[in-house]
Amino acid sequence: MMKYDGAVEMKPEERLNKITSILAAGILRLRHRIALPADNGPKITPESSSDGLDVVDETVLSVVRG
Image (tube, rainbow, N blue to C red):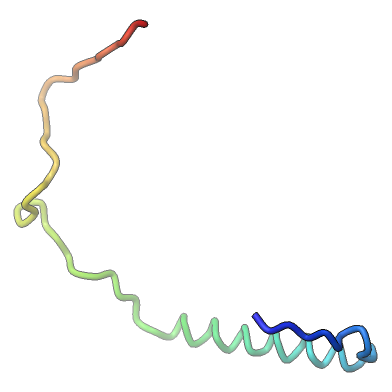
């Protein structure tokens, strides 16, 4: 992040211009990100997963007292 120590010396109009330029850059950056296609990575099906979750027919409850 840029640090600008001269902000105290800026006139209100200069501050407004600086803020609007920062916000405009952020909006352009956001629009660019929205326009990019989403990359969700490779699709892994349960059949192709080597360490898939085991599905158990019976639910077991374990309680530890101590």
